[in-house]
Length: 498
Image 1: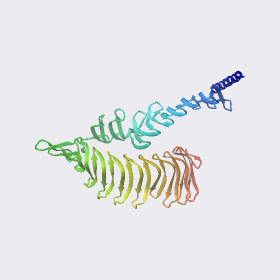
Image 2: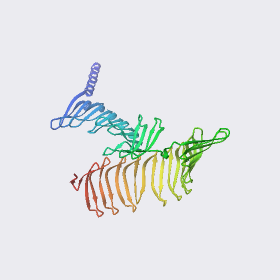
Image 3: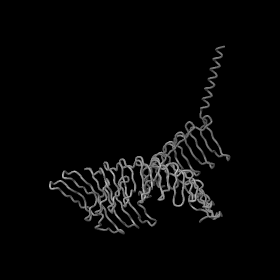
Image 4: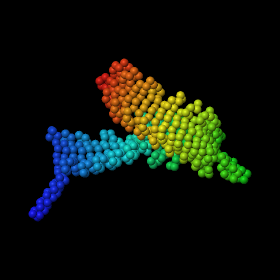
């Protein structure tokens, strides 16, 4: 009897193992559209897609192909349009974009890098001919650091600097107008973006200063042009003449520079032992700053700054060339302009700004040079006109702003408007309501007359006007309808714009 019992157990476990093996095995499967065309083909594991798969359009052309691992998208997937043209290549891990993503558009190729579905690393955009069009860097989904744009002939034409998604500076260079004439600032570079030459054009003619730099940033040559003609004997680019005075002992008493017979730049006075006792900075014989520097030329101790009129502009302390401790800035009339504290050249703690009549204009706090905490702006009448919170230099949370005769309120996320924003007339009545996402207008936006009637309404998609927008009279009568496509007007009152 016991033998029979064990025999049943062996047979039962054998069945389970066999069932499990069959259930884990990969089975090839095809799926079809209602028209009989194949929609997809690949392997199923436990009834779910796994392994290599292909998907098709209804016309039979390949739509996508790639591998799945443990049912999730894995490694390289390739996507095509209905005509068989390559659309994109995307690397996946556990169904999240990881690694390179390449999009192929009609006029450009975009190469991005991702980490767990978040854009991270260098992004490059290429012209159709394969030449680089744009290069930028992303960190944790936000554009950061240096961004460069190139013309089709390979010249850098835009230089942008970002900090955690926030545009800090942008410079347009090396531009040609529709007539093929050079306009604005033009630059050439050593490797990277180390400037070699810099000049300005107006209708293809040099205007202003042509500067040539060494690779370490020192100016090698300056010339001035007007309408393409070189101007000689320019006062402001004259080579400064140095002056040195000595004690009878031969020790230097004073040294500095003259330009056009006027004190210009740094002047240093020494005591009889050769130690620095005072340093002054001049521009065209006008004293701008005074204090003391060390032998390395770094500002130390108490310094004063002056307006060109000679009135005191600011006063505070330096440590090793950086502002440190309390600083006070003044208007020409002697009233306080702003006051606060530095540490290693960066603003820290509470800072206050004032109107020239002495009334408070702004209060905000800093941490390591970045805004941190509540910032409040006041009008000349003492009323709050702006109030909100900063975190690590970026606007966060609820903000209130009063602009002219209306006010607005809403939420910031990482310095960008996000969610519902509202504007109000001075009477308190609603003048606008709309939604934002990552700083871009999104969804329905509605503007109102002060009597409550709708003035204008429509929708945004990807930050641009799309679909029907309606404009009304103050009495509520429909005035005009405009249909938009990516900010372009395509129809007015249902009539196509040619």
